[in-house]
Image 1 (cartoon, one colour):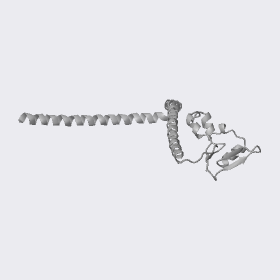
Image 2 (cartoon, rainbow, N blue to C red):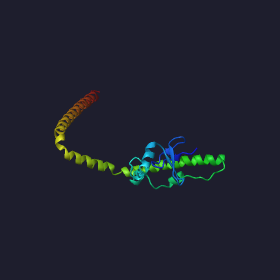
Image 3 (cartoon, rainbow, N blue to C red):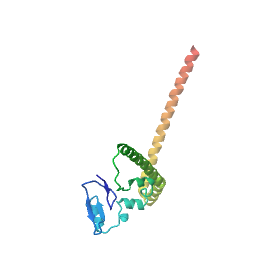
Image 4 (cartoon, rainbow, N blue to C red):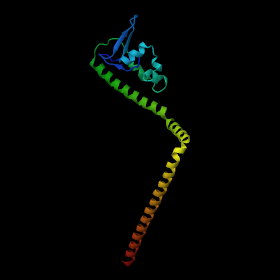
Length: 177
């Protein structure tokens, strides 16, 4: 059994699922669900509908050009069954999948590289717009920070005192011997 691709959204169409529209010129259009079929009938462009693979590829959110896509192409030539060939094919398919996943991760990382700085910039703009809401919270935060720093200083001073007392006791014991 063959797993086809939806003509509209490019998701997999498993056997027995979805529907097929056959045009007068015998061109077959497979759809994974009625949502895709309805959008096709409304003559919507998949590259302009936000939830489709075509949209994500045209906007640069997913890889559009890669050599691993060559392996996904449909081949209609029948091949005589050979157990060794089938085993090698399955191993090769797994290897291609690993390579594809690594490249997708790398693609996502390079795409998100500048996102952190952009997010910070947007947050700063948002804070500047509504600073009057944050002023009381900031004053309270500074007071809390002062209390935390003061208590930390007190703990450090207490530790120094106890360690100094221990050192003094040890030196007294050493002198008595």
